Image 1 (cartoon, one colour):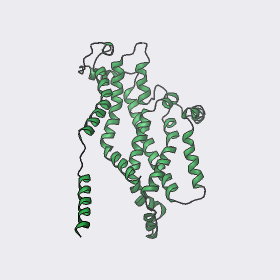
Image 2: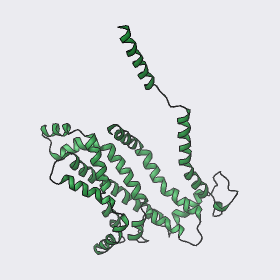
Image 3: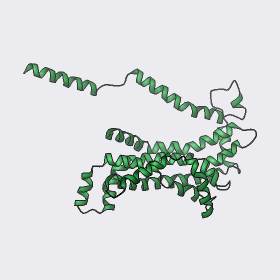
Image 4: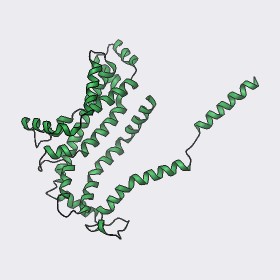
Length: 292
């Protein structure tokens, strides 16, 4: 009995040692280096934005912020050519609408592909995924002609409607729901008398919430930073924020203190979004790792 008890005791002690293991100094040093490397571009942009137009070319530039950031930010926001507040509201409308619609439609499609059985589901999913192999640039000309025939050029609908749902979103939600949602829960809900929509609402949607939060964040950021298509289809009186800020670089002499002040102003909403939704982002990553 003693010979048997000792290995068990040693095994238990080893498991306890593993569970109480803490990261060493090397881990914290690597994280600190990664954090500094990630924050440095923002700090450098703030240094230039807080100076004047000669700061970026000054070989003796101070590494302490200057006192002109708020003046530069006010110049950007009050510049009639930039139309900052109109562009900011347009970016919020476009990014929020596209993010919400992508999450809703992708979750519905992912639930159908992952848990419902219908003819042609496999080839249809392969066809949806295959569209990701087509470069976006190939569709710009026919898409612009289509928007022009509809009379939508210059309006936000031309930016929103083509991106209401993405193939990546459908694939992402299909893969997550197929792994995170047991089919037994769906069968139990149907046995209890739930309709298809109620089963999705009470069973499928709660299970897909972490992945849906991640998809919303990624879609919102992608739509917020989108420059090429809004630059083509919108006019100067109704721009989004990236298109509007590009005017700051259209002159022969570029004042980089104003440019980087505008870039930092455009980044603030994204930072606030990640601060409020960071918990969902982390839970989504951890849930995907556990399910994998």
